[in-house]
Length: 316
Length: 239
Image (cartoon, rainbow over all chains, first blue to last red):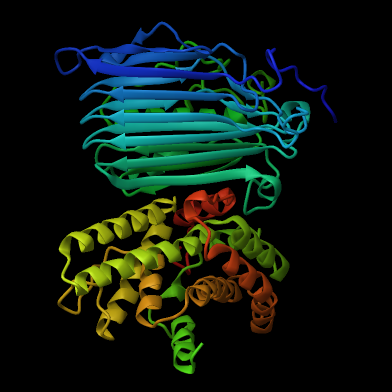
């Protein structure tokens, strides 16, 4: 099945690219649960939306990408610094789209990469949850993300990302597009996590790679302290009722969970359930789902209704 | 290659090398129990995918910089230059830590650490302790690729041969695990190893000078299988 080529955002010229950035600084008010506030700014097409104050002083900050997607050559950079003891949740207002780049331009027929650079620096005892909405890479799209995290002692970083390769709800595949994700987490200068993942070409097929499935998800929690095996058992039980292959394991200090399957909603539901477990592990209040998330039904196990294998509402 | 060096290389890739490689399947046990690895063709496709774009390629490409850092460390210690020694050691520790951090499954990291420790212990007892360690007990924090690079330096094996042997040994160990798990006839196992020789040689020559920080891994299915090993009800292997 072939789709009409999507209309990317209007640009002044063939090679005009957008470079947007956001610089965020979070700091905590007085007291053990003093509210975390943020300073900083963003340049178009990134925009910082109104923050919400959540339990335990956590600052929930939605980022808006006003361009409606990335075309080849576009670059976004998001940097966040969290002062000691501050707590934040950063999410995105909508799913991100990567438009097809290969064969779209006479000047660069081989395509150009869209890039996103993320940098997070957490001081002692700081707590950041990086939970953007789904990424959809259209056929022929090229996307590379680099995410670098520096943690002080006792800092907690949770990141969960879900990518859909091709608008699979409409029968589209990634084609010659590629998705890359670099993740580097260090704690006090020592390596905690390193990922250099690339999906495209042959790795889209076969059990060694994505096995012909459209959705990949990764959750990584760099934990502030060791935890009991019970947490992993709970996370495994949380897979109940969700389609796809899901596995999790212990990092030297933390947790990794991976999803491969048909449904980005299933991946996000599982990660949301793990998020609930991680909050409880830290003795924190259960998360309230960000207002900008589009879930029609609760992702939580004890409340959720039956799941269908795919959801057009999330597929861009 | 001189005969003596060639014999050293054979000793290094021999299954008799006491590093416990035979106790690891690196996810194959999960695949076999799931029915995803039914015979020699599926195994061959799996091994070819890992050799083309798996984490093993990043490790193989790291042998060159690992050995360079180890060599500078050894020379600095021999020349009594503690500042240069500390600098080279820090480069080595960073690269080694990065390689371990690339493995998402705890059982894979435990494997790399145990095999690295065993090889360094053996080399120390044979008269090649890591630089700066007086006693025969080496620093045990290095993983398998770093220990392999140190073995190559001690036994004066060329880099190209060392990378080839790293990949060859990995394939041999995977085939040996598959012979027990699938099960595969020993002749089929040998045919598989033989059939991969051309690919192994080509990948070794491509990877020996490749920058590991520019390579990517497409093995998300391998990572999933390795993570799921901890959930198996009955296990023959430790990964």
